[in-house]
Length: 286
Image (cartoon, rainbow, N blue to C red; front, side, top):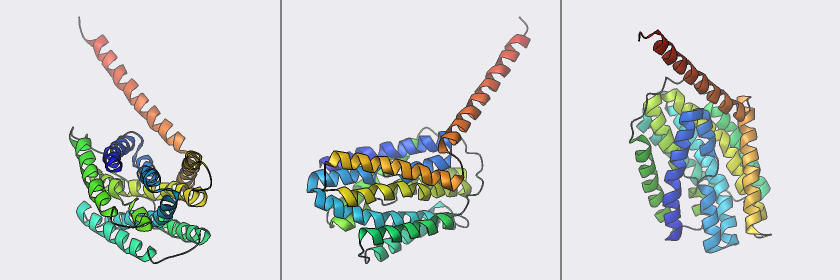
């Protein structure tokens, strides 16, 4: 019950934070955040505390393949969004996720072989998403926008959590990165900002998946060999570095430069508005 409540509380906070990040710094940065183990990482910690290192380690191996299935969802949604509305793109994306997860559930390799297979598949999927198109300017969202996203996220996570309770570690691990947050973010972005913005978000999510792969590779390698706090801390640091590097290589730009540029652009806009207001006040007759 404690684990379920934690997942219910955590997921809405994450989708809300990703929504605000995408709104402030652009869909690419929001997608990069979605690619990180923001949900599957805490689920792994819960599995470790409740079932031990052996279960968590086996689940982490399953999650490595689940991440490829999630990236397949992103690539399939991005391709479908060129012709289909958001609901049709969701159906195509989840079909790709199910097919990829079913295929990888039959694979039994060593850690090295698994990582080679995962890396090859991710490179192909990053290329498949291509360079995202231009997005039309986003209208100001209504007040209920973020709360509705958070409520839908919580509902979907409850359903997934109840289903995962009947599965073994590898199947549960493969379900951990189920594209719940990504699906909601992609559908809302697609509906409100256009297919170009959705593809930009999903491309960032696939690129950010390298961080999650690094995180779970460290867990498979080190869990059970030392302090779990140290292992998870090392995994988080490696994930952050890998995700940051992947985004920089993909965009040719340091993500910090993107954030600073957006902040500067907003600051310049604010200064122009304040200057115009000051001019009007000076020109107004007393």
